[in-house]
Image (spheres, each protein chain N blue to C red):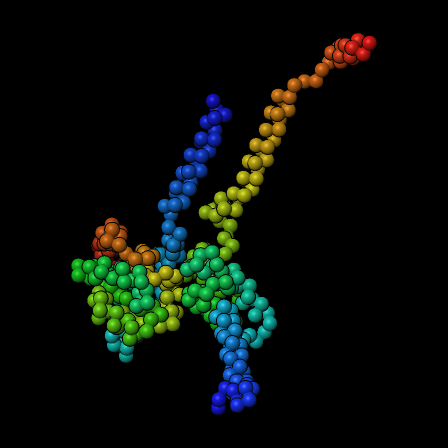
Length: 178
Length: 169
């Protein structure tokens, strides 16, 4: 009896492992930046290029950094969700316009709506490297102390917004500034 | 100029066309090379160049995950190569550059995963499986041996030869 059952058990074990493997997202690489201070930057703002923005001016509030580009197809898919989040008015949303032509970026925003409190221009992708960006769109949630608390790789879906992004924002909003 | 003169010979303009055609094709070849290859970087010392070449072969391109940044043509790989190059020129050593990448992209950026609790199975896996295989082989052989019918004893041998001899008569 055991002789016939052994291959069956082996098969079940293998199938379970393969099944788990199928469910894992290879693009979802844990970021070493979570729990760390947000990388320093001082980048021009897309809509008024003479002005610059750095993380220090955002201290004391929960903010979201959404990495986007006009050449990025998934960003287009994600954009209505970001618009939806902006309408709720619960969090400061900063766009990181990654390796994009400012003209194209401006046109893109005027066409699809601008959910960002400000978009900063990372023309050569240096700040992108500091944030460990490897697949646009990516979204970081930064707490009041300026610590990165969450990273979402790939487009945010409606489900992600309701079940992960919004709850985290709510939780971080309740934390007090030390 | 007409392509053929009145005697039907090819005119000089035809040679020129061929010449430009060749130049054009040669130029095309050059373009292809510059697309497929890695950017041209100038180093002051040959050791630095060597370091650059080893480093870009050890860092993973996170966009196309089964390629190193040396192999990949992705935009990010290009940026990371540039970053490695600039850091080498600034006099940063190998460890500083690897740490810089680790701080931003995590262990996954290393093509050879570090030996850690989390990666233990990855490193020990092949040895464990080899051991399991050898164990199974050993058990199988032992079982086979145990089941083998025992040879004939002395008496039985004698009986056989007796019978054979009787037959011969």
